[in-house]
Length: 398
Image (tube, rainbow, N blue to C red; front, side, top):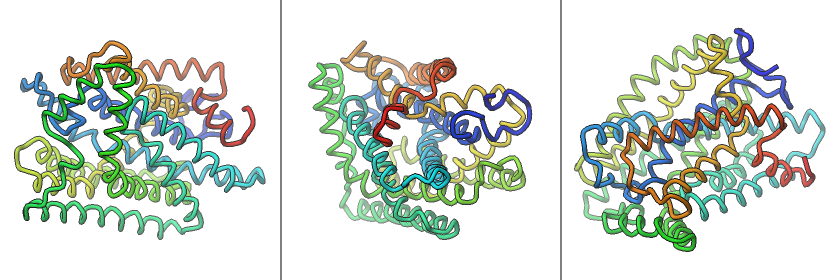
């Protein structure tokens, strides 16, 4: 029986490995947010350069940009990373229950993620997260015996240190040492990216490699530690089996909502204004620091709201669980579909569609994936990418 077919708390699915429905539903929900964010960068060289698309400057266009920045950016990849840390504990428990050697199997899994991530970054989307997970997974492996309290302390400390780092960058910018140009370029840079993405496969791949080289410092110094902090929080929650009994922690979930929404939305408003105003690089860095401190609270409020809804909304559970079970396939599939739509691989629509149209396409992609995942899992045990990763992990055909 699949999760959500009855109206009670959906905790396990009865599928292979007795999967926790709440984990898969949250992962499916995170995929929706991720495609809404990522599609803007796949659809526009200007967004990749940190700029608004010059051909779309109507109030509605700006409203959509600000809404996506405020409600989606830097929230859903944190939720996805939290679930990566939580699933690490589930894998650890599974290996212990079966008597399998966990470390070599997990190392092979990370190697598989690294290979898939490298191919994804070079061929489809340089904003790939799988490579980061492969590296962060090594830290989780080394810290697998850490206590939940210590893991949460480390996560908070990393987040605060990252915020301090952005504040220091803001101070440097005020002193005339602005380093933001090493990550994002200007209009000329964006136009060059557009031309490359409209070109041949070789031009597209070359552009992806160039972008990867530019954002490497940002990945190492900022995104990597942010992902690690979220993974450590997920590891702590996994050790406490928080999502397996989420319906029994309604008071905690309510507190996350009451704290996360006001604080998280206030911080998101500051970050959004600093992103799309002409306040200068220093103000932008301050906004990023505020977002680092408050985005985890808003992501937690989103998760708490969904967890409270799932037992009361079996249809919602049934919609989110299948794409969550095929998260790797769907994550890679989102980039493939967008590349076929926007680059020279296919229709070449880069920077030709309005922000509202682009967001509508993102939602449509997710809805199609949700339906496809349900049909696929009715006939197969794993998604295609999950099947391949399992093969690489276990060194035998699933």
